Length: 162
Image (cartoon, rainbow, N blue to C red; front, side):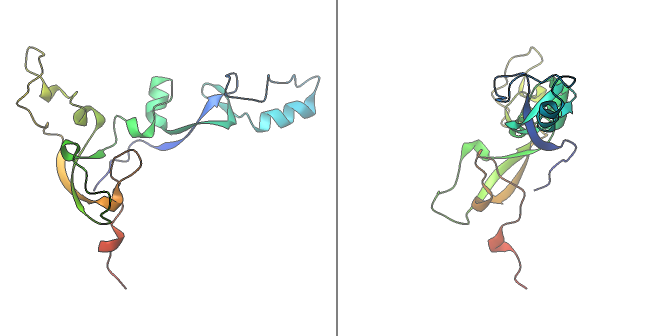
């Protein structure tokens, strides 16, 4: 499967001034320099203020999060392509390597929010199975991730042996 890599993913952290940070308030550097040095090592400055490296919020799309001003989980990235089983059909969970037909496209298209799913009047068009931005591909059941999507990693059972 091909994947558009225009957006990057990475860890997203809660701000230091939230309840998720258990370090307490920022010490005053002029009165307690050593405490401030220790505190600031765990609380670097980000675009939104100081974050707490001990309070991870999860894996995020850094570009969508920056655009929205809040965390957007990597699984919800609007730009990158996602691979989901066609019509929600998943293979037998006991099968190690079973072919799965997946639809590959952006979240907007896979969740039927693309303009092609609607009539000119704005009503949902039930005759549209999938928009033209979605393509069908084959994946292996071993590529299924915890969120139910499929990765583009090659199937180890189909890899050529040296």
